[in-house]
Amino acid sequence: MIGIIITGHGSYPEGMYESIRLIAGDVEGLKIVPFHENQEQLEHDLIVAMAEVEYGSGVVCFADLAGGTPFNISSKIAASKGNVRVIGGTNSPMLLSSLFQREQNLDDFVQHALYEGQTNIKSFEIAKKKKEEDLDGI
Image (cartoon, rainbow, N blue to C red; front, side):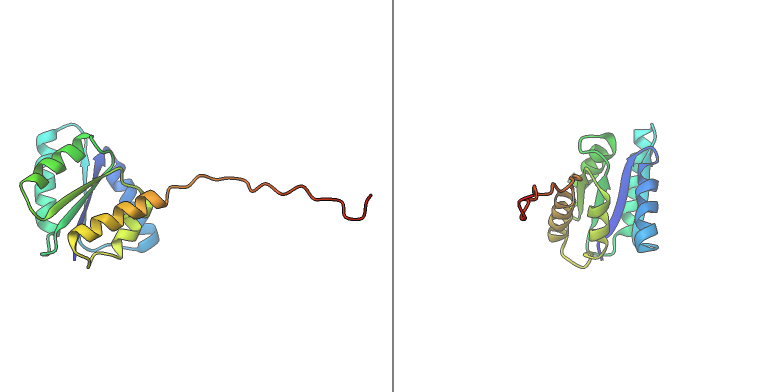
């Protein structure tokens, strides 16, 4: 099973976890790692969390913003490990779908998560009715 870490600025990780937990229930092999201000503490917490959720299939860190501090520090750690991947720009559909794909190999899992995240971004549009033609001539 692939381990999952949700990381991000402030209460983002807790909020994302609470949202998916409300829908999917408690999730095994998932840790949340918030970033407040201390980068050294974040790096330490990420390393500890990675060790806790590594079950032999790898770990994926889902970060709030690509290029933000949690993403960058996760990526720095991942660069020294062969079994850690990092995704930035995490959204709820990506996380929910990923929970049910954790037996895939690590790279396929990441590709699936990215696909789900991208394809589930939608905008609301009101369907426009075609102008009804008056069939009885009135």
